[in-house]
Image (cartoon, rainbow, N blue to C red):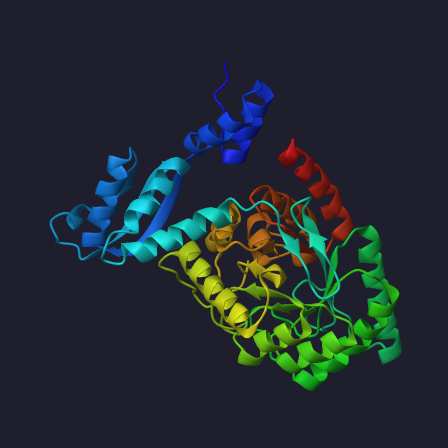
Length: 401
């Protein structure tokens, strides 16, 4: 006898297939086999009580604040608990209810669909990446003299030599298995000073222009400045990696115009101030809300669904505890229905755990990348490509075993 650890309906289906259950029966029973736990924030006490009664009538339940029933609490967070079959029936019942519950039904239906999505395809310009087949790697190429990780290319070299050194590093990453090369010309480490867009373009454009002629590996530009992104796209880049989550209104329109991919990241504050006592009422809830708004803005500007990637922003306005919570709960981001990128490589939370400087955080970085993949990340952004590639090959084999 075995007590199975079930994390998804897919796992249940796989077990039933091995047993030899009829295909029609598998579909019926799978929706009853996995308990979903869905947190809903700030629902009115009237709506919460209706929600609870409806779910109880279906055999599930809803946890609400103690004072909600008496009206002492005007709003309450809710924990909705039930099988997929119960939740699907709940959606139908809620559509006939007032107090905003009809809209909640639509949101719940979309969330369930997103969380069950298994096939993610990214189409940045002329490229196609099948992200669900294995965990993909974004290799980091910093063209800055002040990168936190100590891997930037310094201005003591001649411009020609600096560009050639960067090209060699990028080609090495591609050979080692990088699926995307992410090029940045401004440090985003805590306390970093801004760089002019002219300087940023001068650092990145020559490298991108030459690299694009030498490799078919997709190139990403790590910037939050539309003019820098435009110069990179015109030079051969096909992804914009924006740490501000498209705060600049022109950025989403630019991405739509060039039909490029876009990484929208969550960041609290800005690089110079983001690590000054960051606080959250609900860490994952606020990240999901922020990224959801960024996705909406991108789509409103014309960016297509299969060109958007989300990133919870490890180390960007987060404490050690915040970063660990994100890495443990990456799957919560699936509610947004977009592929997930995570960048833990050499970050300070690893240094705090191991008491090591950035250049000695290889093992911690590889462990973080592997666990991020096992917890739901589709892409990991790393400095050490070969080592991470080997670890992810094993992690993917375990995940799909």
